[in-house]
Length: 172
Image (cartoon, rainbow, N blue to C red; front, side):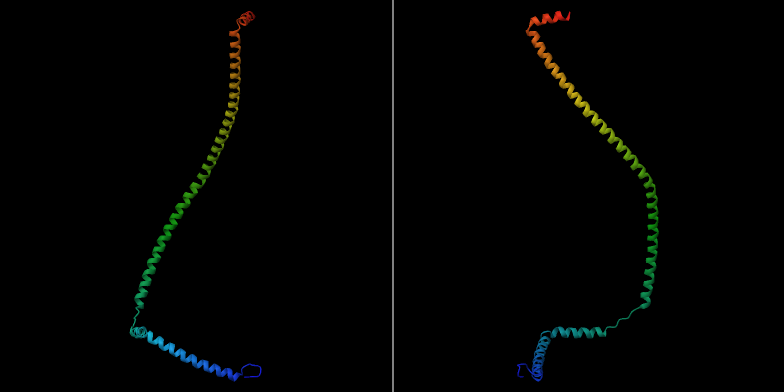
């Protein structure tokens, strides 16, 4: 080692080589253990790969092209019929919308005028009934006051015969 306590490059390289040897030994032990533990699976995978290598697949391009063309023509026909049906429905909806649009505005205007008129009449009658009810209550109170006064006069007169005679003379 150097004077300052730092290791030399040669020492570091030697330590690195020793550690690499230990790593190789540990790695090979772990690899061997893995192979022993999974040998059944590895054998199965190797056999499966060999079987797959022996399989031959033939592709019928002409048949696939024929199916592609037939399916494409079917899809085109279906799309054309769908498109024509959608166009017809859109035309029907548009004509109905145009008819209803002008009628709808007319109905809404008439309905608004009717509701405004009904609201005006309702307000008028409500205010009129309120005023008449107040006047009616006032007249009824005056009437009850007059009746109570008349009752008091009648009682007074019936109790005093002298007053009755004076009243009769006064009337004549």
